[in-house]
Amino acid sequence: MGEGVEWALHCCVTLAWLRDEGPVSIRKLATWFDLPQEYLKKRLQALTRAGILNSTPGVRGGFSLARPPERITLMDVVTALEGPAEAFRCAEIRQRGEGAVGAGEEFSRPCGISVAMRRAELAWRRELAAQTIADLMAGAQASAERTRRNYARMRT
Image (cartoon, rainbow, N blue to C red; front, side, top):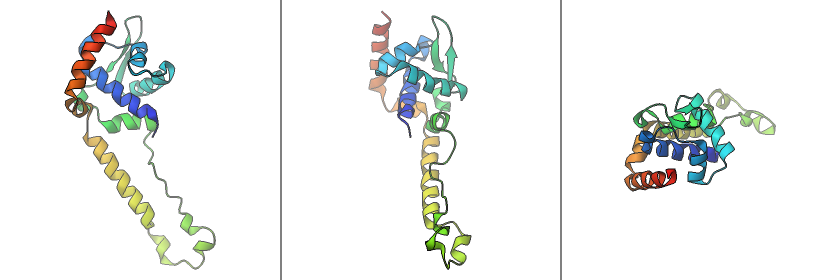
């Protein structure tokens, strides 16, 4: 998973805390987290295409949440950036080469590795789908106050 997922999740939480402030510019978000602006912009544009963020053009423009934080899951963000493809793809290498010679019925079922990896991925996806941006916000109230205070200072 790319580091852009972490960046995107932090930006979503920050935008949720600052939702009463209106759109936040890409410059301010990049400065806020000391990130390269153009790379961050690409990540946030992906979230906009996925309907997670709104992008407002112009001098007073920037990014804001497109939905309430309770309706944005961590899986939504991961999928927007990394795509829907499974992390593990079984290529059935057990059926190739010298190791496959003389094999019988065992190839009619998925191998244990494939089953274990699929089970783990489903658990991971369920966990991310069960947590929202609002859940992350609830677990970091001190950060919310610091964010609002520092952002107000940044505007002056």
